[in-house]
Amino acid sequence: MPFEIIRDDITRVAADAIVNTANPLPIIGAGTDTAIHRAAGPKLLLARQKIGAIPVGTVRETPAFDLPAKYVLHAVTPAWEGGENGEEALLHSAYDEALQLAMRLQCRSVAFPLLSAGSYGFPQERALSVAIGAFTDFLLKNDLDVKLVVFGQDAFAASKGLYKDLRSYIDDRYVETAEKTEYGRPFSDRIRRRSEPEPGFAAPMQNAPMENARFPKAAAFDRRAKAAAFDRPAKAAYSEEADAPTFGAAPDLETLLKSAESTFSEHVLDLLKERDEKDPDVYRRAEISRQLFHKIISNKDYQPTKSTAIQLAIGLRLDLTETQKLLKKAGYALTRSSKMDLVVQYFIEHGEYSIVAVNLALYDCGLPLLKTGSIC
Image 1 (cartoon, one colour):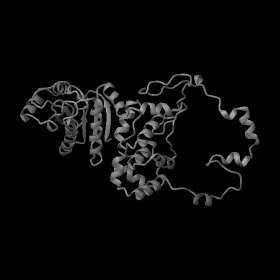
Image 2: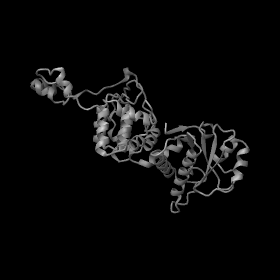
Image 3: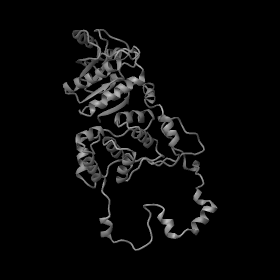
């Protein structure tokens, strides 16, 4: 999995490298620095003292000693001074240097805290924005498991500030109906009580007992609507829906097969050709493995999960209409009855083609993430 958000104590996270918010001088600083030194043992400070001072925006490594890792990457990040002194550029540099150093050390995984967002006073919204940008830029060209570790929900409440109208976007479009998830694992249909108020945005949807479910009276059962339906010619009644059957002689099997549309795999190949896209650029932006991508394009009958289909739409930078067409090829759609779908739709409509950013928003909403890094 190239990028993952976990809620944990970073000193307990198993990774090849753990990033420390280090003091520029060879002393133990506050917050995460203190916690990492305490968990690693006194040898970490001795190793840190051998390095000496570390310039802001740069990173140095030491062994991890008693931590469940091979290395500690000591990243010196800027304190917030109002935003006019290059703080964001220095913070981005620290993230990038840590990622590049992890690669040089042949690490397969690296765990980060949210750098500079604690005692250094960096606004959490801006700290998150820099982290998203750094991870996205790096993962487009490199393969590395990156974990962003948060200790509590408060650190990610700030992510709502990145897209302040996301809540109203969902509230305006969400339709309380039975919702069936289609993202690669089975969930039971959820029937919501229409008489109850909508729960908080960050809380997952709650199941309501079937006996308590209340359904609105459909307009189709209105007396006048029924009378109009009986007066309507039979053929017109069936032809209102594009995919509905019509009366007449049934076509033979050969005719049906000849009229079949392109499959999901064939449509992806068509899009690659139309957009003159290189395979690695697409599957890296989509945050799916090279193996899965080639399995999709080499098997014309491949049936993806909904998450994979959405990730490919983002990797191809499709607009909303093009995304819906691609999803339809796999038997899916973005609907107003799924908050997860609406989060994805929001980012596509705003031209934000970052799986990392989408997953941060989904995480903050208490919703399942897109399955990045999947190989099947």
